[in-house]
Image (tube, rainbow, N blue to C red; front, side, top):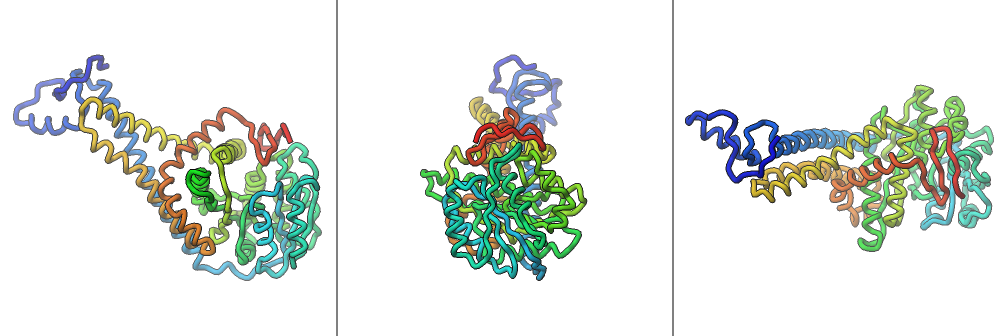
Length: 447
């Protein structure tokens, strides 16, 4: 090991270098850290080699990720150019609600205006004292579609949302052929329901699903940065969907045949669960039927965020993934923590090199390739979402920088989420605290 102070002279090697090779040796050594120690285990050299190993590996991962982003963008284009079909059976639209969140009345009103021939809406709440009930009553009075309200009662050994869904499904008459699950914080277009249900005409398909796209709100400095970062964080998950093996049923936009739902025993899978998404995905996976991602049904989610909201939301999502999908959690942790560690290590190595007076510019240049690749993938997401959500073109154009500029920062937030998920199994969701003991055991700690 090198124990001496770095010297201003270049290390010449263990043995003498012939004069005719001296110039070549000098050129080769210019990029190496200066060290007086004649050993390959010199500490500055090890740091230098590790820097290049980590950075080059991360660049390779970034290139693959960018290629994957191009494939996702091509998949979006193909879906937009195709016609889903005309399959439109009788459908039950189930929407669990809690609290009078901003924009709730507009969101729920949009659910009553789908261009779909035959569907009914079921709103489910835990209690009749919920302030969302007054909003639902106004929406019901103005709706031309049948609207029903289910009061589920307090949850029993599972998440409140899961319990609301279970009670709503149990209240359905037998005439509904398709069940559609949607969240109360999304604002959907008139053609959304038909596009989500139509692919189910193929009996090999178990379910169709989409994902949220958070529309940032507020100005920067007044919660806008938290909203922007939440949107960029969420966008990274949206672009994971599309490959059959990686698809999962997102509870905010999922359609499934009633007989498939029953055959998969989803109500049993929801016993003791806090995540309707992953429990439904696991139950459906046992049947061997596929989940089809419908990017054309991307659910716009206009939402104002604070910093604490952002951390609570992102930490909760990653902890749920750790409990319900350890493989996805492990792959995500490896990807995001390696990105974060590499950049932090690279910055430290560059600063040390600068302090020692050695050339550093080429190290900084190669390091910048890593966030540049992440930003390029973010740009692909921006291009895709503008085609998927034309109705939101104005706010999307106002925030178009978000998904490109913040993409290099998103892995650091993910890294924090993964570390937090190792330290606790407790979450707070809509002011209810839970302890996730296992996928089938949930303790309700506080209502």
